[in-house]
Image (tube, rainbow, N blue to C red; front, side):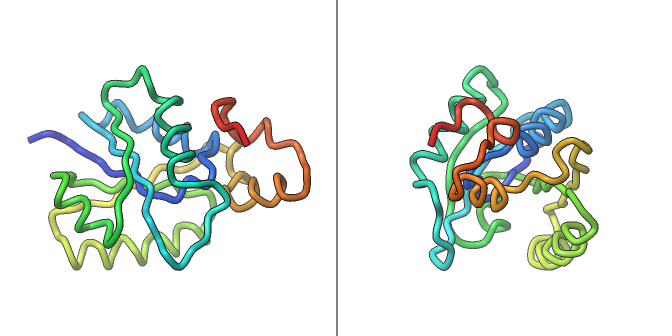
Length: 152
């Protein structure tokens, strides 16, 4: 059976922390599906098409990565795509508590799906998409937080 992981997120925008987690996880999986979750209750700074395009450019040479989007529950998307793993990054203990709860509920809904946590590398710990958006809104320099493919 193929080891397929879904790395869900808003990626608004994708950060160097996200990229680090994906690259470090690649040896463990046959395929990683980076998927932007569509949440009608959240407004995004960047369009879905723009975010998908950036991620595809970043990983254009990586055959084990697929980039897509989905609506609804992550576990349902995983089941549709035959993915038995959900990949998540942890920056802080607060992230852990939040992600642990979601992981436990996901496991209750779909016992065949495991959540795999990767610790963020120390240099990426303070970086989040929301911080990047805030810096952009106020005209700051985010070049050390996002890949060069993210043009805004």
